[in-house]
Structures are given as structure tokens and as C-alpha cells.
Amino acid sequence: MISSIAELISDRIGAMPAGERRAAQTLIANYPLTGLKTVAEFSAAAGVSSPTILRFVARLGFQNYPEFQSALQDELAAQLQSPASRTLDPGSAGGAVSPMLEATLDNLRETFRHLTDKQLADIAARLAERRGKTFLIGGRFTDPLARYMAAHLAIIQPDVYHLAGQESIWRDRLIDMGKRDVLVIFDIRRYQESLVRFAEKAHHRGVQIILFTDQWLSPIARFARHVIAGRTAVPSAWDSSAALFVVAETLIGAVTRQLEAAGAKRIRDLESLR
Amino acid sequence: MISSIAELISDRIGAMPAGERRAAQTLIANYPLTGLKTVAEFSAAAGVSSPTILRFVARLGFQNYPEFQSALQDELAAQLQSPASRTLDPGSAGGAVSPMLEATLDNLRETFRHLTDKQLADIAARLAERRGKTFLIGGRFTDPLARYMAAHLAIIQPDVYHLAGQESIWRDRLIDMGKRDVLVIFDIRRYQESLVRFAEKAHHRGVQIILFTDQWLSPIARFARHVIAGRTAVPSAWDSSAALFVVAETLIGAVTRQLEAAGAKRIRDLESLR
DNA sequence: GGAGCGCTGTATCTTATGTTACGTATTTTG
DNA sequence: CAAAATACGTAACATAAGATACAGCGCTCC
Image 1 (cartoon, rainbow over the protein chains, first blue to last red):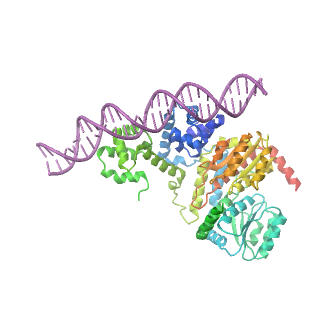
Image 2 (cartoon, rainbow over the protein chains, first blue to last red):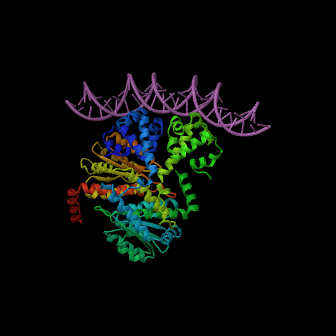
Image 3 (cartoon, protein in one colour):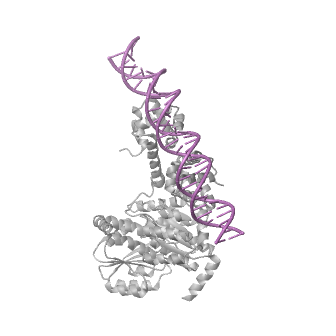
């Protein structure tokens, strides 16, 4: 059963030629607004010609463009009158998608429920405090999170380093680390031996460790000054790092806000370097 | 302060002549839909003549009817993009953390609302289909997402490559790419020139492109076979990639499920290699 | 490698939409 | 109550929108 035009589109998008598919994608991307504009505007947004838009509309089964617009408007009217229908009702979700999404949403809520504002504020303050250097490292699947965070932090402050490559390489960086420095580690099951050893050594050198881990806590928690425990369970063969990712983004935002004055200047300087 | 056109109307409706007031009431009655229709339809709905509608619109301060409609559309766009304004649940309204979390949750819901099971299934099937090679690449902040996805896919199937390092390095890899191959690109604002060029060249070689982008669609959408548009707006100086991250995880899960038989064997083999 | 088909864009045309001018009705004011 | 001013609708106009015809191009399949 096809109830909305959006469904109709995603149902037929596979059987469309390239140009019309672009039209479809542009429309879906911010549905249904693009469809309410004129053909010319629609075509410009999609980067195709106006006839292609009309052919696209015709392929969906509409006689002409105005009829298509009316249908969109009717749909919108129905939506606006019953805002409840907007939120995904779990009942109708038959597909394989929503279990994953639902689980992730739950994970996020649960993760943040166990995190207080104060904890996050403390960690953000520690990261914003420019006394020493900041190092980031992650495990097999979580290293991208470390990279992501490093990419952002490196823009708003100096001395941010992502530890990458072979173990021997970053192990040697230990020599640069001291009491004033911060080490951010991402480590979820199955916890990596090499990371635990690295954390221990860093800890002995007085480095403050901020640990992102799962709810079962990596052994590194022993040495960590701050521990963030995210929920990772999802109906999949893999664990989900989404909760940790969002915590990371939240921290990036908080640190940016704290460094606003200094950070803004730095960002301007960086821009002018391009 | 007047933020919406509806407020503007109710502010001035007292000072309007009878006919225009009828127009105003009709518009408010099922706002903003009537305003998006043609002048003729609007006037019919209100039971007045078309010039009255135009005078009404002029009295609100708009130069002409299209300008008025654009304003309504912009307003609608803002509403549709941040359902937060409507879905305010009074329970959790707490600290400084939750704005970020709430926005992210909304982004996730919105992103998946525009994604159908079928689309994801198609993409997953394409990724699971072992005819050619799979390449992944991302932009400045999104490259970690490409890495994350590559790290998982590489475990369950062969010929998965993350394109990293300097532009010249991955540009040269083009020579290995052909019709049977898939290129997964992550690109959100501000869209990277180098990635667009790369995508274009890959496209001309017949490579099928799967694009992860934001709702404004990277120019790469022109060349992409599949486009995933995620919401990125959060109350922060940065855009959020969390929605794209979750979509990536969902796809990883789906591909894994499809390759279950072959994948499981491969995973066992890998384990035994350690 | 060549022939056929299908898709896409340019240019042209037609339609209908928004706009304006003007005459009539209605209300307001002296 | 009369006269002026304002409001409203009818009808003609100009403009911009959607629709169509056609030619070029790329792609696929022999």
C-alpha cells in the first residue's frame, strides 16, 4: 500500500533514468518543500532542466504539474492537522530499519541519562584548558571517533594530536607526554591489549586520561580520570558507537563554546591561511 | 517582536476592511496552506475577489503575491526541519546538555523519516554484491565516518579500500576503478572541491557512487546513484554528523546480514589468523 | 565497432496566473 | 441627509509559468 508521495517515489526511484532520479532525490532531501515551488526553481535545485521535472512528475502518474502540487498540498494539510502522525509510530514500522533506529535512540537517551551536566562540563573544561597537549587515540573500530574529535579540536586550539598508525609509532610518543597533558582514549569491547598497556604507561607519567568506553567499562577505566560509558547494544552483529559519537560531538560543542573568544580568532586565522 | 506571518496577521487583522479580514480568517483557518495556492483559489476559498487577496497581501507589507508565498514557504521549511519546536516534551526539559541531545534525536528521526526501507535495502544489496571493489572516502570532518564504515565492511568482504592521505594519492587510484565498482563518498558543507572533481571523474569511468551528504545535497549528488541526505543542524558552532553515522551503522548491519553465510566464514578465517 | 533506442536539454508555444484600471457599491462624516 | 472617501468587484492586460516539439547525445546491445 502506498499512502504518501514520498513512498511512491522511493518505490519507483529504482526504475528512473538518471536525471529524474536526481529530481527525486532533491525532492526527498527536503520533502515536500521543493515540490511546492515552481518547475523552474525545482529544476534549478535538482540541476536538471524543466522538462525533466515534468517527465518525473508524469512518471509518478500525475497528469500535470499543478495536479502534482495539489497532491503534495493535500498531504501536507493532513500532516499539519494531526502532528501526531509525524512522529514515527512504532506500530507500522515493519521493516528492518526501525529496530536499529529505535535501539540507537534508546542508547542515546540511556547514555545521557547517566551523564550529568557537571561531568560533561568538567571534561569540556579540562579539554579547553590550554596548559598542555591533547592526544587522542582509539581502538580498531573506534579510532575514527578519535579522528573525528581530533579534527574538530585541532581547529579551535593548538597542540592537538591524533595518534595513528602502528603501535610502535604512538608508543614512542609517550616520551612527549607529561602531567599537564590530556589523553583521550576510545575503547569498547573487545578491549585492545595494546591500548590498555599504552594507557597504563601514560597514566604513570601523570597524563590525565579521558576514556570513552561501553557500559561494561574497558580495563582502562582503572587509570582514567574521567570515564564516559555509552550504550552500545543494537540488533546487529556489531556494537554501535553512535552514543559515544554523540557524546563526542556534544563535548566538541562545549569546548568550542568555552574557547569562543580565542577559538573564533584562531578560526579566522586558519581561514586566511587558505 | 513578530516572527511568523500568522502573528503579523493577527496583529493587523483589527485594522482591516471586511473583505480583507475574511481573507485573513480563511488563511488562519488552515494556515498556511491556503496561502500556497493560487490567488484565484485563495479568493474562492475566502469568498472574495482576487484583487482583494492582493490588497490583503500588500497590506501585510509584501511587494507581490509570489514574495508572500516565498515567505510562507520559508516559514514552513523552518518548521519541518526542526520538529523540536512542536515535539517539546515537558518532562525532560533540563540542563544545558539536552538541547544538543534533543536536536540530535530529532535529526535522527527526521533523517530516517526521509529514508525508506527499500532505499536502504537497495544500497545494502549494492554493497553486498561482490562483483567489483568498494572504495570509501570522506571530506575533512567526515572522513572518519568513511574509515568507520570501511573498517567494518573490510572484515566481512574482500576488496574494500579506504582512500586516505593526500589528494594525489587517491586520485591515482582512479585507474583501478571501473563499472563494477562502488564508491562511497561522505561530503557535507562546506563541500570540498577536490571531492567533487574526484566524484566526477569516477562517475565518468562508470563507477557507481553512493553519497552521504546533508539535506542541502553536495554537488556530487549529480553523479550519485544513491543519495542519503542526513540532517546536520544542532545548536553548536559545528554541524553534526551523527545522523549520517547512524545511517552508516544501519547499512553496515544490513550488509552484514546479507552476507551472513559468506561473512561468517570469513570472520572465522580472520579470527584464526590472529 | 556500428546501429538502434532512450534519455536529456534548447527553443518555442500556449495557457493561466498575477496585476492593474476603472466603475459601482458601501460606508463614513460633516 | 448629502457628499465624499473608501472599499470592492468586473474585466482587460502583461507576464511568467507549464507544456511541447525536436534535435543532439550517450548508452546499450548486437
